[in-house]
Length: 493
Image (tube, rainbow, N blue to C red; front, side):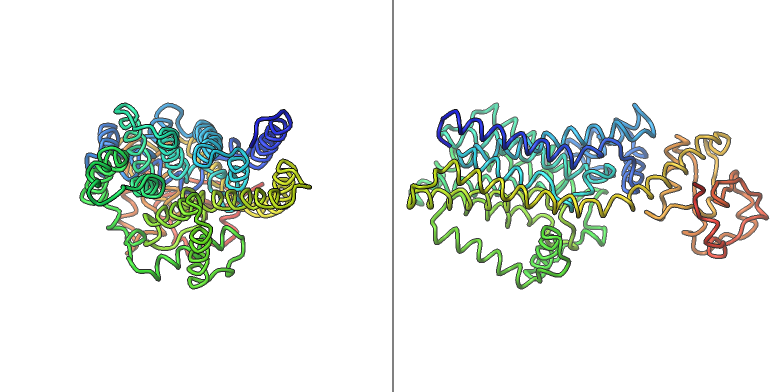
């Protein structure tokens, strides 16, 4: 964008519209409470010693899963207890920081404010990003994006000017990358992205210069690659090995990759069966073909960010769009570059329409199309979430009102509850509200085989949800939760 008052005004208006739009779509985030994912995540972090949480962030193998997220949960829980507002506030600030990073990285990569503004608008909010705003269960993705693109911003800012990364910049990038992969393994692609950037924009002149090239152009790749090796060793050899969980067992086949791609693309267009694995593959090939035919290195880099950025999570069981927060930035970057370059071409061939008018018209056309679409689809998730949070809050309130139910080395049997999220939610809340790691909490519905009457009598506390409230039971009053009528789990309004 050329420097002129009109361009500056147009850029300011576009930035203001993006901020207003994102605020309007995300402002409820602070007021949402805990999701059922938060209950599990907080409990899993809280049950481990503080020393293990800290050591796991230094790549020391412990039982802690996703160390930076665990640090987030246990730090805020120890300070504020069972209060969701501080958790939501930190995540909300991080989301705004991510919006800023989208613009900064787009600006450094392309040198064009028009591209940066357009891609920021396209990527800042999606209705299928709803887990970011309802509870903090996807804090891992939010933090991973923040650290990943902070490192990328520092890297591209220096390298786009032809500067060799200095030692302190490498150290900062390495630390940011360590935090990113500790937040979530989806960030593991950063070394590959650095390597791709250099191969595209600063390739070695010949094979004889590869070693020299690696010492200079490859410094970022080597520094983050070493961190990546430490991450892989700590994550996949220790007791927190995600490969032991069926949901994270990878299947390294093209079919699984395309199946995962189709899944998140369907979320992106909000049409459940629009993409098949085959059509998702054709789309990726088409994007590569356009980049090759136009000989546009920026489009090629955006394509690699999509393809390589998806790789760390695309080979496990398919996941929704929110899990692809990092690589789907590549689609927005690709679209922004393509639309702006198309505008440049049209304004060169027909000088009747100034570039500013074209770019402004494209931005406004996309803006007035996307906003109503996003508002409509974002509203779908609100009712079910608020119902879930109400049930969680009701359970927590009853637990807080009965401190006699909790204590060191006490045992609790939960006959039934109104929660519909995770099977162990009411038990997690009991641990967190009670605050005693030595407590033993069981849910009757999850016990197999069921306890005998003699075993039930050994519990110091037995509770059940009846007629809209939690009540304490005697051992001889316990019944199988499957025999309790549906009305017993209805919440009183």
